[in-house]
Length: 157
Image (cartoon, rainbow, N blue to C red; front, side, top):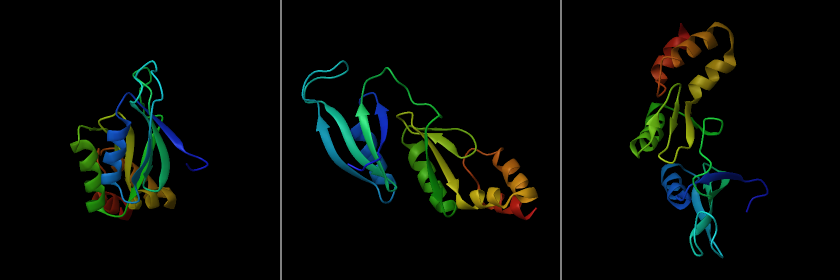
């Protein structure tokens, strides 16, 4: 296990989520799967308790902790994309697998984990500052999935 690891709480589907992420994002994989050595409040001995996984190079563990805690937008994975095709691929994978669209490049997977699918052109526009950033920001505020061509057009004015 990495020295610093993100722990993501799931009701009972940590393994399924980890496998979906590994299939969807490059530099992602499922590692060790730990089974409960005894019964616990939301599971039984032998149930999957912890799953080590990596998402786009980031070390994580999924904890099957039960239904008492829910995900919120206070935590999200941010995936930088290089073009519209990559943006579409990740967005469609998440939303098309039981997830839901939100606004400004945000969506949730079917387990309730939030994702920001963010084209680099948007990040670059915001970093440029001034009117260019303002125009890109205003364009983004009207979108669910980010439209790369529209952000490029907004940058140009």
